[in-house]
Amino acid sequence: MIYSLNIGSFEGMKSQNQSTILNLIRLKEPISRAEIAKLTKLTKPTVGALVSELAERNLITEEKSDTAVAGGRKPIMLRINYSAYYVVGVYAAAEVIRVILTTMDGKMVFDYKKDITELPSKEEFIEMIKSSISYVMEETNVEKNLILGIGFAMHGLVDPENGIAIFSPHLHLEDIHLKEILEKEYSIPVIVENDVRALAIGESWFGQGQEISDFICISVGRGIGSGIVINNEIYKSSFNTAGEIGHTIVNINGPRCQCGNHGCLEAYASEIAIIDRAKRKLQEKKDSVMTETELSIPVIFRAAKEGDELAKKILVDSGESLGIATANLINILKPTKIILEGSIFEEGDILLSRVRDMVQKYTIRSSKEEVSIVCSELGKKGMVLGAVALVLREMFKVGGLQ
Ligand SMILES: [Zn+2]
Image (cartoon, rainbow, N blue to C red):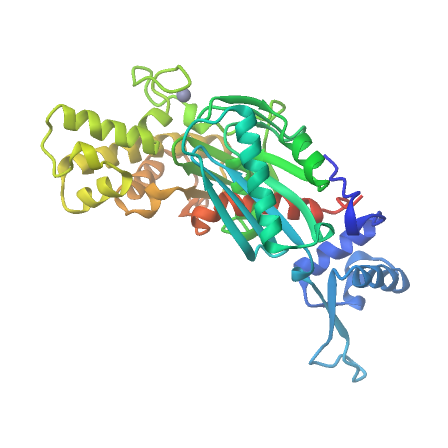
């Protein structure tokens, strides 16, 4: 996919060398023109001309170095001017739409959330998205030609090529042409991606996936999904639906999943599955400090911490299922890192340590292979920052500004 920035300030920025230089400045800043020439093997006059154009577009800043090079001269050092342009990030989950406006380094200028309280029709959903984006644009009053693009992280099956939400299992909606609708409305480039794949891109841009060429993000919320990064690229498959770890089978005789199969990971370890299981056990009059009416993920974790055996067993079992699925994934792809995202990893160690134990036990590896398992540090803003990263990734991609 070539990101067509044919609107606004980047019109005419056609040179591949120019985007190469822009990305080099991002990665090596502060950097001088001479160093750029050395690293890109472009001539100094060519670098000079291209850098001048970037400066004219306000994309870079120049400052005199504190240290002199040979000959006593202090070179001019270049940096990205991150606050010159903006990106809109949208995350549509089952229960909330979140829209943020950030500068080019992901700093939030505005953060807006709209709750989805009842199942919307397709038209109502589109209207909610538009009104949320428009609200953020109006409140921040940023000139439209300073907005590089709108990144959209959508839950469910997504066709990123055409920017279509193919199917939303939680909202029971299908075939929403988000890119087409929003580009028509705002005349700003729109990039749509599945939420967990956007999260993985967000981790590679802002989080724990930085400078790591192969890692997997596993997100656990109402559903369970994964974003797989191989050789610095997100893996989608020809069908655009890779990464559905939530529907890998951990027990063929297990409970029925939303997808219709039995024994999917999601039916064991999603937030909904964990709460449902606690509810069922309480209805069976199992001994516990928990009560059916106030069940939630924090309540179950709190009970487990207080020593409640039922709560502990539910969380350990969920950790076990998640650990088995994670170990299987590691054995197939051998990423160097697994990044876990979701409140079940933030509430306490009981479930997470079980995941780690299972991975330790069931992965085949040499003594040199150490797969680190970490929790996302982006927190609840991971998906929406991932949406922003969708735009930034294209913006700074070599050859991406055509
Ligand atoms: Zn399933």
